[in-house]
Image (cartoon, rainbow, N blue to C red; front, top):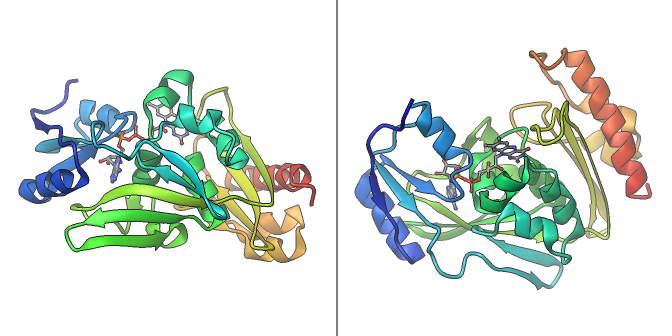
Length: 260
Ligand SMILES: Cc1cc2nc3c(=O)[nH]c(=O)nc-3n(C[C@H](O)[C@H](O)[C@H](O)COP(=O)(O)OP(=O)(O)OC[C@H]3O[C@@H](n4cnc5c(N)ncnc54)[C@H](O)[C@@H]3O)c2cc1C
């Protein structure tokens, strides 16, 4: 199947992106790396009237350390995240995203906005207490990652808004573990442990509609408590009990690699 017809625009500033989205009146979609949007358009599960290509917008492909955070521009590719050394946890997580071709096109902003519950970057964002910077018709706003994700592929972003970057705190200690059936597949379960501002935070992906904080396990640092904190449902990849068991094992590995 091929995409339904659409109008294509390629603005070079955030302001012009917002204007294009406003003119599309809710029928516009941002195109970043296209690694999630184009497949669903090809299946006609998404039929935007206007595609707003943000790849030529200036200043959004930079990554810089500022204080305790690393600011990742929305257009930073997964491959660049995997290669940088300013935020080792992000590098580890990005290296686990899909295959090389996906990582060379897919963007940090796209992954966060797409909000796939099995994606790596949203789990890192929740685990580190990241802040998402958003530009919109009413100005800029900053959203805590935990307040952004509301369900599978669903966020608190308005259709006229654009993610411009994400501030990821650099953890003093961290651990990352994920389980996939085959190399390059979306993870069945991802566990991220991050010590930020002397507080340990644990987030789990693939066990619910959004990345889940395992608050009880943050207090005890017991992997078993992660199993109690999550309520996965069964699917064709495995039963709920199987997923819970995998979450406990990934938590054990992530805690161990964090030295906790
Ligand atoms: C075969 C395959 C395997 C994959 N495996 C993984 C995996 O293991 N882990 C993983 O995390 N991901 C995986 N992905 C998805 C990949 O990471 C995508 O790059 C990512 O989900 C979306 O980023 P993108 O830049 O391609 O966004 P796009 O596909 O361009 O856009 C995705 C959605 O986000 C919106 N959007 C994009 N940028 C912005 C922005 N700046 N502001 C607001 N909205 C925006 C778009 O309008 C669209 O709705 C895989 C994809 C494929 C095709």
